[in-house]
Image: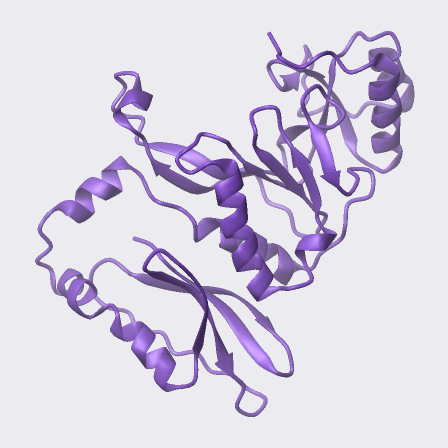
Length: 289
């Protein structure tokens, strides 16, 4: 049972019609299950008359949207969704200073966040950031090795949105999603990926003795990757814990060359999203295994 009172039928109806007229596929969601009610929703293409029949007489209590790409910050605690959002925003802000104010922000009933946009590129649902499970979270099922902190809803998926019970728009409008570039979209997703903490299997594996040449190099000399970047003009912009998250390089001429050397064993750093202006080139570097 929801802790939030039902949304008035007229409010849901008006929003559903607006979303439909904006070009969205509107789905009749159960507010508790956060899932479409009694339909083959993957194939559903409702018209305005059908949507009116769902919401006009309060038959349906929530609104879902299909094929909209949304970042979903789940609030599982340790860290909280707010903490994850703050860290993600710090990375995005340094890479693309004017991007965040354009996005749709929405809070969810559990204390999580939805961040929405529109882009000509859209992918299916993805898990972007996880953390290892705590013992009390496994429920005796030790195959549950991770908890999802950030994921997407995208092509072929659906997301429950405001004004469904417990959902509140903080900025923007689902009926008027901001259009972003493919590069901006990649920055948003890669910033989320960089916050992943792995899973129990990963934590166990990196705790074991590491004797392979690549493992030894990563353990004893991994810091040299950053020292090399500093020597050629990179400066630190943002850092989380002891891991470099991204940095800025000085422009030299009109071209930038990035050389990547592969070592035997687990990789330690990944160079990914970038943003370039006439003054500087900004790139995201994050550690992963």
